Image (cartoon, rainbow, N blue to C red; front, side):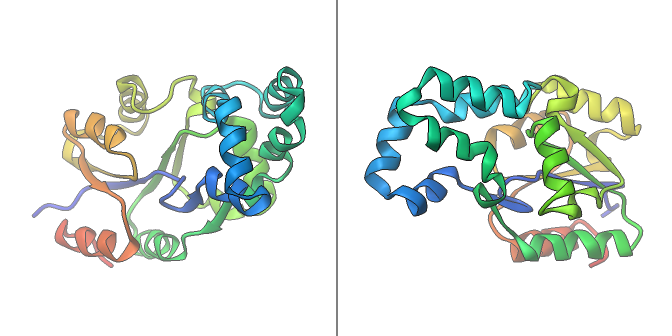
Length: 203
């Protein structure tokens, strides 16, 4: 099998754990977290940020609209490093082994522009360790919209089976598959490593 020419990693739940409900469970308990998420659509807020809305100003605006939950909402920004944690070490190990073997490694993630800057200048300098980065907040479009995948192809000059895409969400994988990309629905680093070997990549 001819190996792909580049490997593309999602970030959330592939390289960094992203489970906001679990974070709020730890901070406030399950009952209060359920009440919060029932009253405030925090995932919709985050989708706005992923699509390019300013991180801090967006969180502040949502907190102002929901004053009873303002303190909890502000944690989305003020303790983002606690919210997005920990690193998935096995995935980073794979990424570094690919790069050491000369395989181009890209990122394609639904994440805000300001969020990315905050992360790489603070708890996650590893986010600079890509040959190319495709950040939804900078591109103005989010997965699984086909446009963002087409923008990746246009920028990197690769398409179809030359690209191997890793994501934890089935709908994001499906769009990549429709464009002919090789895909991996991420569940665990060891399964990813095994599939990369099947694809003929050096690990």
